[in-house]
Length: 283
Image (cartoon, rainbow, N blue to C red; front, top):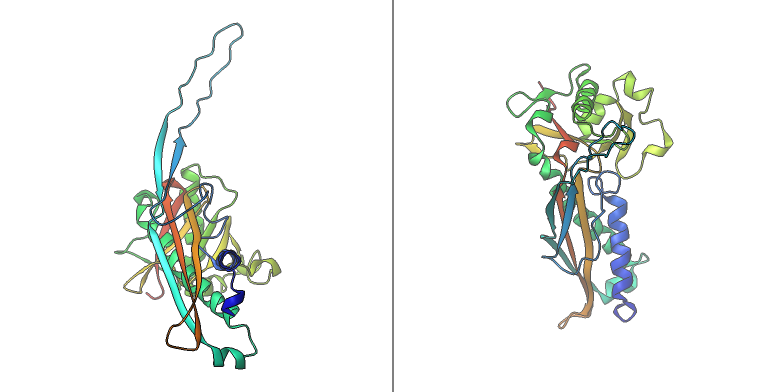
């Protein structure tokens, strides 16, 4: 198998697998506007953030005021790097009916996804405090009647107050929160699990103006206080790349090996586009 190993092909296939399994890192939840060409860990991308454009009343035959746009640069640093490195014995590979490399690469993609998604989710700490609903001291009990759906409404209101566009909003919830939504007719009848198009990249339905996605990577404090993040893709910029995939022969075994390097980085460039609810799964 090592003789047929083409690094660029496997790198592309692994990246494609990653894109299929991301929840937090998928396009439409975050943006990849500045991904560009990533060569290695330590690369950076300058993001120019332009201020609001003024609108004024027009008067005939009168010069219009000219606005000099304010801008500020932010750096998106590719500062995360994860590797995989596995071997497969010649005898085992010859006896297996499945393609060993395909199965291993799929497993690698899921593991890399978990690390990258947890990295993105951890940026909830940079969301503005005044867009929060509940906190570690007074978390909401998501299993109480009407609490789960009401939290989505409240998070939507927080984004509305920040002039965040209503189109393209998502909210990412833990499994128990999704279970609570399934007991609410407002979710089940008007956008819940019965819709065929929802079962992709963690999406489980629509509610209160959000695409609802489910993930086991929802941040939590002491496994009790979970951070439900409502967000718009303009808020977070994410970039990733599989920069190296190599095959090698294990020196003292009849076995092949494969290793790879996944680099990525992200930044909450518009914090106002994130709102965070803190919930428990008990009273």
